Image (cartoon, rainbow, N blue to C red):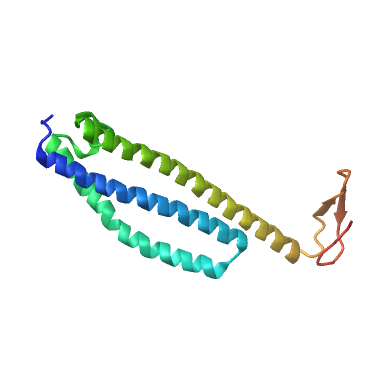
Length: 173
């Protein structure tokens, strides 16, 4: 590997700026998912549409940061005599001096934490949407399948009772 030069230090500082933008973008994404989650529960379709439009606008501007990160990765790999696929933050930490290593390590850990939170929130929102879809499907099925003999209710003691009346709704206490 080549020794750390002033040029590499500048590229690392530029990369830190890109990583800060990545961190900010992930934090915004977490905020958007939380807001979307609340809007789904409230069933506010107008606000959901507005949120989705703003997310699409913002994601378009983030593409430039992704290309910056990729070009910096290539430049750093070239400067350090590595292949692009081998240029990772962990590898970069190994060749930097103490100050640079601390900065890169801090951003890497922050990104790991935020990505884990983002994956969790994404899963929660996906599960909520799946449940909403399932409930809507069951509701439509129960409404449209009038007189279906498959309708079953359960009493407080757990006994089942099949209903085949031709009614829209059967309410029993």
